[in-house]
Length: 477
Image 1 (cartoon, rainbow, N blue to C red):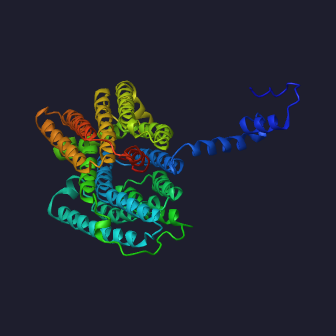
Image 2: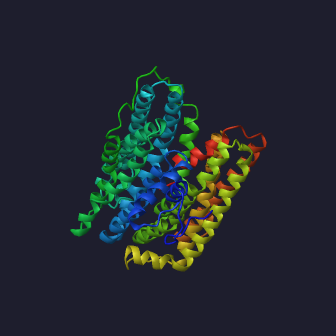
Image 3: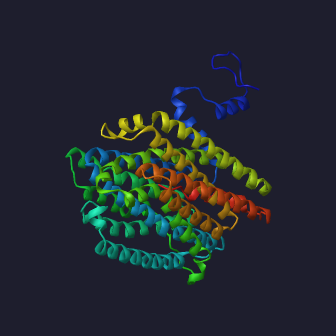
């Protein structure tokens, strides 16, 4: 029975009144309460932590674009290019090295939690491994900076950006370790807070820098390097008993798939930023100013990634329902649905980039942004195929195909290098086509390897593993 209209002169029974109040409430004063009930109802149909992590992703995405807009408007094009060289190195190395550690910490702590065993020793062991990783990468970065022309060529002579890179390796290492602990102990509010706070703390100092017209990219670099540490401190506030005592954690408890995860993660990040890395390597001195516009185009092309993350969140309730019903046989259908959605978003992104990309760039980043429709469209096509490759890698990893996923990323890197070397002499066109070829090759390899792996049988729990990959392993920044 439909609820009675508000002004209908019908006497409702107490049960009907109670039911009506639970379902709909048209009084303006009760709208906040009704919204709260709807959110609570939605949360009951989604996996634990979806809302908290989703909000953190949205805030992080918006503030990333805010940071880039203020930096592009305030810095000269060479200095903006130098700042984003730092950005790319940070977001290739930090997620590439520390995201696998976060994944393994979350898995190991969660497994201990299920057995009512404290995960503190696992977190401490992971912290020691992470410190070693950070030390090795830092040593390598310093050697490269001292022995090559990277400071003068890529960083436009700003030695301070090397300092920012070293700081970032340690601050992001702490952040990823904390997020692994949050995920493993089911503290997803803190996980989402860490992501959102990092983005906000990165953006806020840029506002006074823009106000005083700061032209030194090192200040913006510090806004990238330092906030993860403070964001982690904010997220840790009130998180008691995070490191409960337990039996010592052997290295094997963290290294089940750590090597393959580490290799795959690094290769994926390299392929994701391959257009920028290729342009930096191949650019002549006279072309370096143009790279700033290319970077803006690359960020515009990544808008579909943000949209896809929202779509993934919307799909999670249906996937979770399948898990609850024990319908692991529908795993292939779920992966097929995700792949089709990716292709749809990629096509829309390419059309949007070809028609509105440069205009959107000038609105957001200012009139000094100069990049053509074709460039934005090709970059968006590469980003769309990269999303498809990431989606298929999530599906493959959920079937314990870690080594296969790493091989597929290798194939993509080789395809990018080969295509870029021979396709054209135009700087932007060759890396744009190379990105399409590389991401397309990885996506095709992932799909073929997934199909072969799925033929061997889909174990119970594979769909739940896919949901975990989607929910707590966000796509590239």
